[in-house]
Image (cartoon, rainbow, N blue to C red):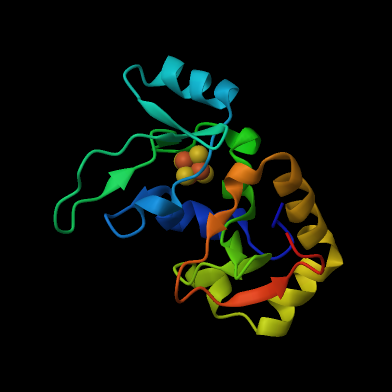
Length: 161
Ligand code: SF4
């Protein structure tokens, strides 16, 4: 979904968005029931918990700098390919609720996009991506996360929630 501005090669070398520490466990993607099944088939024992109609994987208690990799992550990348969760397809863009309105923010951990001109990131949203994100969130409100301090807000939805 971001192929025009984010190369597959850059993502393949990084994968930071698929690995979580105790501070960003709240950032884990929301899966559909079908995707949970696919992951469980490949990784028996993976546990999920429900989240507002979707599913997130269960992460045990992480200590210190301990890291947790998404169970869909393999040596060659995401096992779900183009079927990966919507959250992952739009990352590092995020949809959050900010003061009663939905907004699109940016995860600063993505080195590749975070250092692009703000105008380029916003223009890409205005060219259609923002509408797609808001439309998906209408059907899947579970992907909307509460605002997390430090995430730059790139664009507010015009209509209030
Ligand atoms: S589902 Fe795939 S892209 Fe998303 S966090 Fe897991 S491994 Fe990464």
